[in-house]
Amino acid sequence: MNIRNISIPFLKSKDQRSRHIDKNIAGIFLIKGANIAITFLLFPLTIHYISPHEYGIWLTLSSIIGWLNYFDFGLSNGLRNRLAESLSKNDIVLSKILISTTYGIILLGIAAISVIVIPAIYFIDWRNVLNAPQSNKNELMYLAYIVFISFSLRFFFQVINTVLMSIQRPALSNLSGLLSNLLTLILVLLLKYTLNPSIIALGIVFGLSPILVYMFYSVVFFSTSLRNIAPSFLSLDIKYSRMLFSLGIRFFIIQIAGVVLFSLTNILISNYFNPISVTIYNVAYKYFSTVYMIFNMVMTPYWSAFTEAYIKDDLDWIKSSMRRLKRLWVVFVFIALLMLSFSEFFFKIWMGKTITIPFSLSITFTLYFILNSYSAIYVVFINGISKIRLSIIQALFEMVIFLPLVHVLIKIVGLDIYGIVVAMSISPIIVLTWMPIQVKKIINKQATGIWNK
Image 1 (cartoon, rainbow, N blue to C red):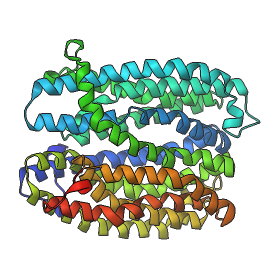
Image 2: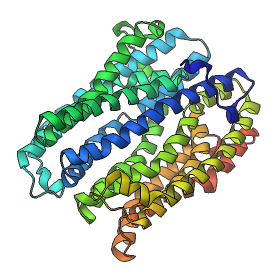
Image 3: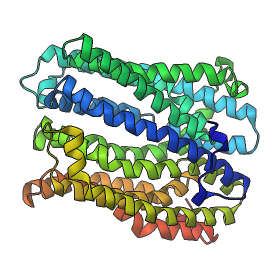
Image 4: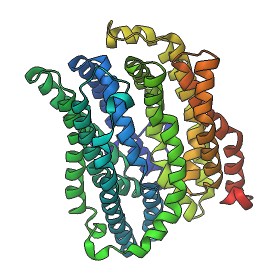
């Protein structure tokens, strides 16, 4: 089946940019559909291989080390927008310099962070951090090293995905996730039938799979279709780091808010409740995030397409695209409510008696992802054109209020795990109070001052 020949009827368009987007959306749907199926198979398989308690520990530790992914100071998003701009102007030399410089900066960053993190891991008592007093201290330390090293290597090699997104080939970018999860599934099956339960072995498998895929991608694409912009040491020019970081640092601030709102949730749940509650939360999150994941399949190609359209002053295309996305969102609201109505039945089939998901958690997740999906329509446009000053202000505000809000909702109001989701919902709610105004001003060429920064 040739993905290029597939189109989605209710998104079908006449202009070339929209047709290109539709083909990518169709490809992403096929890829993500398979990816979701693999993820749903992998989730219970992993839990049954070790235990809900150990899996909660693994998720929490991954979240902590995963913070390093955000400490690129927004470099990946800076590259994504700057590269899309340079390619829109057919500036191949600048594009090659930007990619090469990005690789060089990341390599230096990993080296600098390793000097601090590697000794720190040895001295930290991970049993206290992960609220796992019954676990083996050395085993948790070794697991922390494995997770850190794998995240660092993945951080370096996944630049190829940013490049593919910049050239408006998100279907290929998403394919790397499918291949990674497929490889992980195969390796976890091998572990289950050949090795006794081992959280160390699990960490190696989950860490190694994406690295191998990204390495394969880098070799294949930079030696074929992307050969003219492939990174090289001679094209590395550190003076262009300012061009990347001037935009990237602004995205970095927004990413830090993402760390607080998402990566910190597993740690909060583990400490307010227990590691098993982390697993319960993530099972529910995995199910209900499917709606947002599917909607995000549609949104993904629009980021760089909005960049190109804005650079070329194609505002009519931007307006029509926003209308199409809003109509599509209504369909996803219906899907989300349908998933909620069948959630209890699905959890029983999927997880059996291993995990019980409170219905209150299901309701709050449904509302959260409905709000998040609608706000994403505006966020992708604003991010694509780099007018993110107001987004930075919101991110800083969220960082200040999130932890106190979680404490109030759980300790004072008395909400259970779903109190975390209620606190997370503050983000899309705030977005929808001001971002539609900014988008309207920009599209109508009426944006001035902070609305245009």
